[in-house]
Image (tube, rainbow, N blue to C red; front, side, top):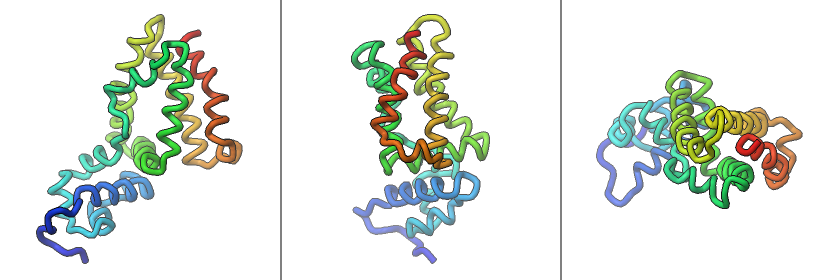
Amino acid sequence: MARTGRRPGGEDTGGRILAAARAEFGAKGYHQATIRSIAAEAGVDPALVHHYYGSKDDLFAASIDLPLRPTDIADVLLAGGLESVGRNVATLFFSVWENPGTRDPLMAMLRGAFDNEQGAAVMREFFGSGLLGRVAPQIGGPDAELRVSLAVSHLVGVAVLRYVIGFPSLVKVPVEQLIETLSPRIQSYFTD
């Protein structure tokens, strides 16, 4: 049983809880992970998890925090102009997925999107306002939101097959080859 009461100062209790949440949500998905199991993984009392993060929903939202702020997405993707956006999107996408530190939160996001409405809402919000709302106005042209949605759909489909299902032909290919192969196709959504 985890020790109760206040932990000594200087220890990164919040960070340990967040790391445990990412591991639990990544391994079990939203519905199967519990505050109690996350607390046990972090070595704290469940009340401390609530103290730091509030509800399970709030903890889930905190656990999928990605290293790129949504406000920076358009600048990163459009660096080098519209003719570079396909490569930038593919490079950013796979750099996040290939990093073990961000892969678990992304797996949690995907599992959450399939498990429950709150998880789906988090994913819609991230891609909706975080990506569509910032990138589509920058690329302009007819059906900009649809074209960005199709690019995201394309990449998420590859991510599901490579990282979740483990589709052999996608798992064995080096990420550089995936970026090279996908970049022109992603670019076509933005410029064709």
